[in-house]
Amino acid sequence: MNDMQTQNDYNSFLAEIKQQIKSSQIRAINSVNKEMILLYFRIGKNINQKQKELGWGAKVIDNLSHDIKSAFPELGGFSVRNIKLMVQFYREYETIEIGQLPVAQNESVQNRQLLVAQIPWAHNIVLIQKIKDIDLRYWYMQKTLEHGWSRDVLALMVQSQLHKREGKLISNFKNILAPQESDLVQQSFKDPYLFDFLTIAEPFLERELESNLIKHMEKFLIELGSGFAFVGRQYKLEVGDDDFYIDLLFYHLKLRCYVVVELKKGKFKPEYSGQVNFYCSAVDEILAHKEDKPTIGLILCQEKNEIVAEYSLRNMSQPIGISEYELTEVLPKEFESSLPTIEMIENELKQSLNTTEKTDD
Image (cartoon, rainbow, N blue to C red; front, side, top):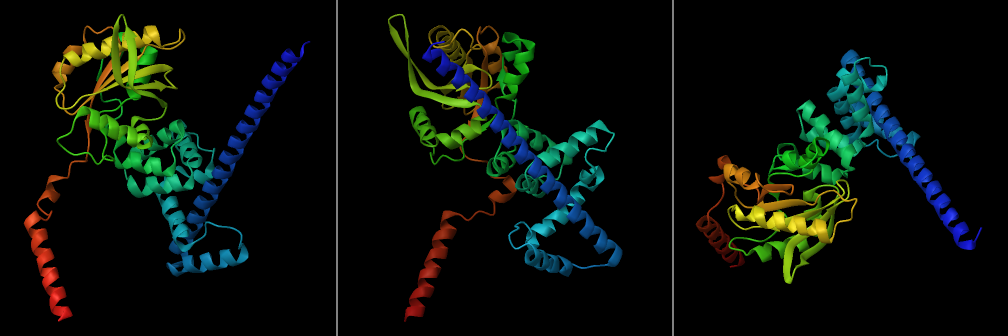
């Protein structure tokens, strides 16, 4: 056996060992997290029972925090605030008895027990504080496990109401893709996309929007969702003797395909679908590997007529979705009247200056 073959065999063996180590580390982390969640649940349950049975007041939590810290000075997680959260945590989930894992006979209850125990403590706190609908809370738990969201990303997704936007775009995926693929692709996109992290304001050009998204690529990728890898901006395609430029080109690691993104200012126009259909065909022919899935097109516009959008996709040969984007969140109407006008702000500043001058005198 030559040295090259020996090295290749060793590299393959090393890769396998490294993967085993990573898998073991993940299982260890999950095991520790599960034990901590169960411990916090039991502590919350015990405090709640004592408060009901013996009439103990809130003061007991202060005492517990102090005494546990004294007994286990190296152990964190037992501040007064965190112990109060343990009690709240128990009260939120007492009906599914997380501490009895996995005794529950009902499959739905078992699934919920597992979800709560798999989510990190900080994630659980975000969910019980921000979402009261229990079914919706479990939906976000599943998405957290599926995408590996950090606490901050989870909070962002909850704030932006992802559950109302995921999979809502108009597309021809069902007509173009295999049934087992179309649903997954549909759920990988949103409508609308929220670009409230941008400072751009009307009036602006499409190129300005593109530049600003590039400057905030990390936040842009978070909003696009997991799996998107940025390939290029104004990506050049040579077709025949002509050059064409794609606004933004991505590769989706989970869907295993390229994603062509075209940014449009204003209202959707039917000719946009033909343009993106052409780009997707060209990417399939020029860039895509033979094992890649068909390139997907995503048209982002500020406004669309749903009927016009649906008609525009009927005779397209490539999978294309059409979504709107918003630069800022719309302020609820009930709060609009409470905002100060420019005149009010100017008067307030004048009064403040006058008061300062009198004080100085």
